[in-house]
Length: 594
Image (cartoon, rainbow, N blue to C red; front, top):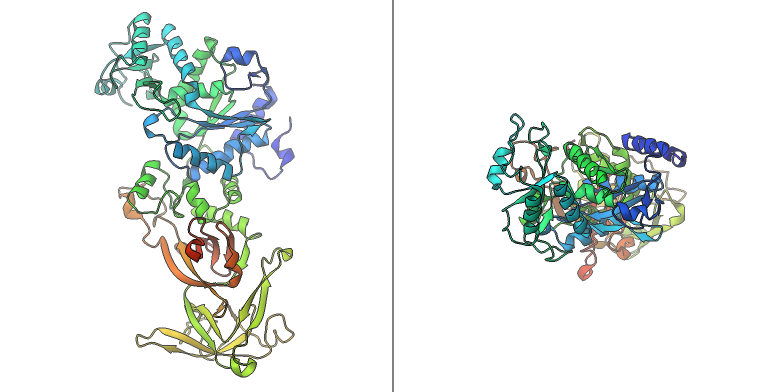
């Protein structure tokens, strides 16, 4: 066996890798066959030895947009399959027709591809739908009835709720539990044929109404629901319950390791019971899949409830599912996150069986580490005030513009340089001037010298203010023979270096300063309405000036605005009506709450 450590010594181990390596060493699934597509035991038995050493799956319900927690699951399932010469299936758990939509199907497929993963292996596209298996699920349900393991219950929803009991009281058997096999079979077929109204009956597995695990108190496996399905149309008026459908989907697809989050841990005995019974009946391949649970992602300053994310969209708190403040994958992508940064984040946080909170700074750190070596640099002034070089005309003549340059990326000399002008009038940050400087302030104040980065040294002479006391212009004199890169550049020592752009060639741009959507680290965990915990400063829009190298920026292009952080040309708004739009992805370092 080739362990992943031999292929990539940096891959940290975890309990899932240990389970997979044990199964591979013991040959747990080595004898199973594969029919070339999902199938029952008989069809798989006629197939070839399974070419995949393991099979995992990513099985979202298409009822919303994927979020950062799903990104972790995608990286985990597809990554494990990749590392162990296996195959990961892309499967839609579309058993709930009223909440599902093709819009979500398309967005999910796009998100998985964007993250860098594929469900095509050995020339076969492993894209599946739970609804593809509705015929088999129905057949399996009839088998359970015929084996005396399922019955049609016609209690009301309220009666079922009461008779189910609770954590301190065992459940009570349904009065319909003792029906004959023939009567149950007929009533189930009546459900299928539309002879009973919605809600009039459910098919339940016959387990143990006194079980301390409430999930085993005769779980419902089919309900009546007249709803048009996005994949099967109006063929069915009964639909399987998720907890019944999911293990069957895994079994038909020859999944070896069914990896899900901890909230499904209590469902595992039902998962195993169902597949054990179907295996005994010869309906599914053996040995059947096993379920393993890991802790879901809890990220500070973020909520991932689909219902609450939808409320944020519907109520206009954000501009849409792809608002850059949203934790959705489309939102993270528009914010400027890269597939590599999300994969790096998933790898760093690892996989555990205990819940914990991951600091949002860990996500931003992964982004910075990914972008730093490859993002082009640029200067930008986000809160501009004019700087006038009062002796410029005297030294260089009116209208003269000096050519300056800087590396596109200091980590990659081969990337080339960017060029920009230096002239009499420049734009600088308003915070770079103080009439009375605080202690340790090394930027512009009367009498102080600073270097304009990649340009010249200047000495501040003062500033002009309006009637309200706001600075409208800063004045300075150029110190001759101090241009960066020239022999005299180091002759004058200064403590401060500031960024700037020239009024002559700067581009005016809209810059959106996005920050965390919530003001508290663990939103929606206390008694407060989560809407009361929104960060009122999660978006500030400013009119900025940026250097001319950004004139050719295209949507999704990433940059480091020197000293300000990482920014992306907005993939939706950038360039519309000739207007450059840049979103802040993350600052140069984490300063939240400091």
